[in-house]
Length: 211
Image (tube, rainbow, N blue to C red):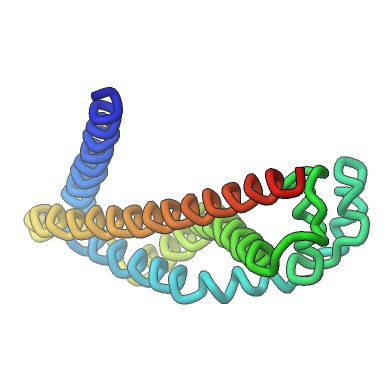
């Protein structure tokens, strides 16, 4: 019964978050009007599309990028990274940091190494996602703000006031789009947690076999 109550509490919290996001999107759409809301919907849709179409590409770029320039700054805290050049070439050297020194990496199966590499690539996807929706998003919104000021002048007339209802409808579309992206990302996190669980299970099994 405890687990059922726990799951119900999570579901209730998620539903509450969804309703709050959708309600705020409708409110901002109403206050902004039709043109501003439509401009935001189009620009954010483009931003999301670019994110999903370039996610694997950017993760592969980070995976193969030469990061040896950062090694002198990291070896003071992690001496194990002294020979690190890139994730692609040196990801096996990171395994003892995750699995511990009690595991001999030479005895690990190719499947385990491949699973660890997949997990590392997923971590890089998370890093890129955080960067994309923080720093790059601020820059993108600033550019869109400049474009809107130049090409879309705000006219506070009766026609603009009448467009608030349509703005609320477009705002609902903005909220639905944001919720869709949120659900997709949550699905990715759930999938990654499953992979992490497999990695931990494999690590535990290997430790039992070698002990």
